Structures are given as C-alpha cells and as structure tokens.
Amino acid sequence: MTSNDTPRDPHPYVGMWVTADGFIRQELLPNGRYDEARGNRRSAYTGSYTVTGSHLDYVDDTGFTATGDVRDGVLFHEHLVLYREARP
Image (cartoon, rainbow, N blue to C red; front, side, top):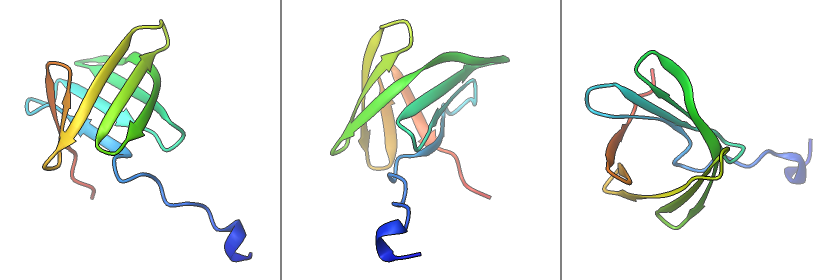
C-alpha cells in the first residue's frame, strides 16, 4: 500500500451525538450521511450532511433542510443541543 492508497481519516465530527437525556441520537457517518434515532424509533430521520468549518448543512431524505454548528465541542442542531458520545 502506498501513501496514496491510505484512506483519509474521517472528519472529527463523525460519530454519535446525543441529547443530555439520551432521547435523540444522531450518528454522523464518514460517508456524509446521518442517521437519527428518537427514543425507540430507530432511523427516524436519515439524510446527508456537509461540513464547512464548524457549520453543518443537513438535507433529509424527504428534502427537509436544517443546519447545525459545533461550538466548544457541542453540536447545536436547530433547537437541539447534542453532546459527543464518549467512545469506549
């Protein structure tokens, strides 16, 4: 494997983000997709996202759009406040 074949590291925002009560869980996937669970409802919302600096633009699979911003390690996604889930 040459250095050109080395996969790029995923964006630092990739991973699971959760509300303080754990009800909403939003996983940012390395392929530019997201999967959001709400309570017991898995994949309640799915779609794509792009990152520009600390700003995220979301497009739900139904066409709905939303935005988010990461400030001091916290994801502010519309009216939600999500925290990075600790990795084991």
